[in-house]
Amino acid sequence: MSRSLVAGKVMLRLFQNLQRSRLSSLRLRHSSVKTQVVTLPDNEAERLKALVSYNILDTLPEQAFDDLTAIAAYICKTPIALITFVDSDREWFKSKVGLTSSETPRDGSFCSHIILQPEDILVVPNAIKDDRFNNNPLVKGNLKIRFYAGVPLITPDGFAIGTLCVLDSIPHHLTYQQLDALRRLSRQAIAQMELIQEVRNRKQAEIEGRQLLLIDELTGLHNRRAFFLMAAQQLKIAYRMKVCCWVMFIDLDGLKQINDTLGHDIGDALIIDAGRLLKQTFRNSDIVARLGGDEFIVFISSYFKDADSIQERLQTNIANFNQQQNCSYKLSMSIGIERYSPDSNMSLEQLIARSDELMYAQKRLKRQSLT
View 1 (tube, rainbow, N blue to C red):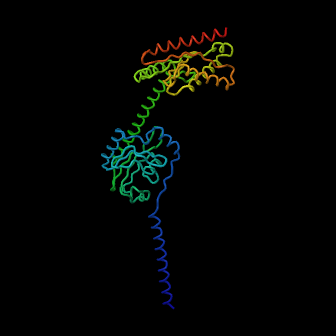
View 2: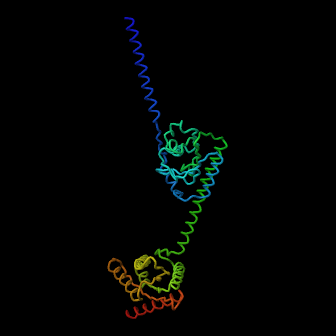
View 3: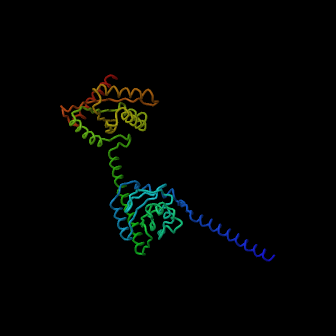
């Protein structure tokens, strides 16, 4: 009886040990495949907007950024250094030392952890022993990354848009001075981006300012200054290429009467409609401008046979406009057209003066027919 009891206790202990062994094995296997999913920052939409505003993604290498990664690799004594930007689904490398690839998927990347805690420096002494990264392709793949240290790139508005980081294929430690140097270099990267953006914005403002000086405020057409600049250039090309072109001077009929009887708002509407019709009548390569008041001018390339065909096309469009539009006025134009021939070599001023004379001659005929 006692022997049976002893045997029963031994079997029970063996069974319990077996169960514990299986449970321990299960926990070990679960731990070995454990991966940590990186969540998105709470301000992800604003962060991506800040990144896009710098217009830096997929740009060409620049010496200023390459200098920073070279200095980072030298200070930290690592074979790899990167300036990265964390996009919506990828991590793109603006500058790189020791790598040939230009981007990596965002999921599972080292830098995706940094933007979650932008106030900290992320240091991974040995990635193979870190549950967050031991299954990372950079760790398990050909690069066999073991060491990582990254500093977030923080915009002046406080958004973490990327990193300055160093990597090594062997476990590594950095001194306080090295970490401090990385932090300082990251600020220089942001400062360089701010400078580039400021220069870009200033150039854009200058371009827009020049455009405003060349655009008629009411119609959106070129103004007098723009016409003389552009037409003079086109005339030089016509002379060099031995082709003909045309200058058409236009005066709106009855604008003063409309202003006096219907008001200047209606008069402005007439001017706007006239400018829009002229723009639609001719090609984008032609120069349509408002000289001021009720006067327009067009520089036309050599695709018309003669002045009559130009006038016929315009008058047809005017007739269609008056038929289709339910306006309190009728659109009417007096037109003068002068042809430029390379043989005559007339100046732009002469072409304008001659087309102006022809326009007034047509206007006089209209007045005589009314009286």
